[in-house]
Length: 623
Image (cartoon, rainbow, N blue to C red; front, side, top):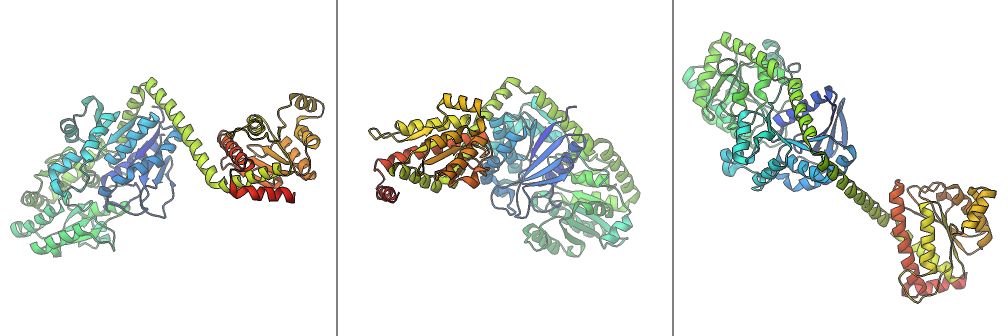
């Protein structure tokens, strides 16, 4: 398999975030583990995610072969994903030049807003994109109704992404069916690839040791719920089941709820769930543990007699696999990816969503039959290790990438790349022009004054350069000896030292090219004149020697250069240095600077700038 260069986009879900934190859940794990395994297989992965804290670096080398790029889009603080849509254009603006430079083989968008960014990248660069939605807006609206906080435009945007994507990765058969039925997605462009689990990171540890680490009694009946605390995850159903275990089954079980906002932050859902526990009289049996680092997950899963996940809907769900990898039986709602990963009666049980009584019945069965729970736990670990390892999942996803890359129309991609090259060239030139304008505007005005003052006192301007700069020198002389915009003005004494081919060839043949401009300065220049030397690097030896000669003769020296100015910077009386290190863009900026100088000088010598006229005459008198 060809080693690919992959850009993963995950606008709100960073691979570096703590599990169970705000907006931190399965997508974070998916992106992190998939990138890690792709890199282990030899691919190169960049993950673009929004910068949500000021201390984060722009680029972090997170793992061998994996970089996390924190995109400055919106304020550098945590923002709920429901409010991120206004910042996606800014996200794409930042990412676009990086995509052009990096030449990625494929983009992998995660979530619909990342899909917006990927769609624009494809339009402007021709790089194909794959998307994993993780959740669909229309499915969310079906289950959450008015409680859905995402913009109403989401579904229409998802329609556009579905139509533009080169391939859609569905995480389970239900996800695929929703894409076909609710979004009219083409079945040929959908591939079902489930989520995975790291069976090395997540594995069983001694229950006694795990419980001691969590300060849980060895004889307690323990149920675990782990994930983001949002209503759709159904933790209230789990609390209701704890109540029914006590009331209807005479079982006092401890519920560990891992997830929620970090310590010190308001967590409205945790407060709601705690109030529910108090109302049901089980607040003494429910422990809110907060979000957890991944290093603690095996401890939590291994401490539990059973893991419970009761979402209203779930495209896949990674936590059931994590529990199975740790040898813990799972009871989950009979929805989406949960019913794909959990085998009813073999690795756990499936129950109707929002049904605390059905959940309590299955939990009671497991809590009263430790040997059954152990058998289910072992079967779950076997299933996780044989079907859902991240290494295997990454291989399936890489195959999707390969298909997308190979199926792409070469002619279409070539045209898009060429268009991107044109756009990129203009964008880079515009950036240089803006920077030159912002940095050099005052210096350009002062230089134009100095040139006009040179003419006013009877002096002349000598101008020299090599290659493209030679053409600029002759262009500058032509505009001022002739005319730029103002008709009827007198001709101005400007001599391009590059224009006399007889002198250039004779002197360079007899004495060497390094002194060809210095010789002309000596022959044609006088004190009170000006020498304009044009060199993109500032290191052209013949221009440097011309400046040395001009300094000896009392001739003012102006250097038109690029970033830094090279050796000319120390020799010039005035320096106009375009803020770029790219020769092409420096020359482009020089062309504009020359035209601006010509226009200003014409106005000054023609008396159109009243504020300068008396000043120029005064300088002529002083000269």
